Length: 477
Image (cartoon, rainbow, N blue to C red):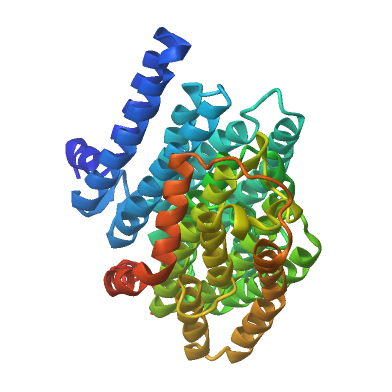
């Protein structure tokens, strides 16, 4: 393939990269008061990149290091659009604090660029480059409010632990290269076609550990609660959605395309990680009073559910994971939009006690948070129910019914803290007058709540076949 065709395949990423560089210059040369222009153009760049990904050609480029297929298209459209929503939420939230700086949207663009490279990775080098580009931008976003001690602490913890996970990832990649003789997924798959040797398996385990950190799967979750609590709320909304989806798609691509012959081995590792994540997220969330920490543990459990689908080791399992992650992204973004919309006397409402009597003060926001809570616990017919139905059906069809049973038990345990939040909002006496909700965050929260039910019933008609086509692009039997 000539260079022009290769660049055409990577056009969405090239457009994002050029947009980030140009907007960086624009932001540096214009007054701080005009930063809103950079924010608007950044959102437009993400929307255009999603469109370019949707209509772009398919194929491989750069000696197999970059893959544009149905799976990458599906993931990029979802990732870029959700990044644009997160940018919209961040603009309003930081604007109300008089802290809207042009560097924020540039970092979101660079993180989205890294995610695009991740989901199109065709070898271990592009995998690592994509992961690090995304991670470096997220480290800075976590500590974006430098005058906030908690945000600085969150950014430092994320950076230190992220460096550890990057080391594990790189060490695993070097072992795989050494024993398989190539960094390309296709060549690695050919080398382990008849089964992976001990050296490759050691490398694969380290690779899985590094990727498990990126999706906050237990026992590699240690950064998640502190970062979620300390980072700015719009940053957490971004963390919890698009980057996790990108990392899950990368998980699927690395395992399915490079190690289809070792599916028996990596399936067992994923099942263990999924079970630990579901149980830890369910039980650890029981003692949380801060809602950002509570949703951090909820996200750990939800990553476990997504890994349940992936651990089935089938196209149906990958399809289930893709559907689950899309529905989860919308729910978690809506929940954090609610937190951004709620304040009392100018102070954010982030604890369980702050939500007391919310139904009387702000019934619309209380209904939205109720929708996200019942969806997260998997109550039919909300989107969370359909998401869990997909992954449980996939793992049962793969012959691991006991994993689905563990997932159901975890859902029952987690129902306690979701229902406790609903009880506090609906039946406890109000803790004080709630400030008027800003239109931007309120609009996203209401839209996400309506998607959770009833729009999801219509959306699944299109989402299901799209996810099936995307899953068929992976090299599973």
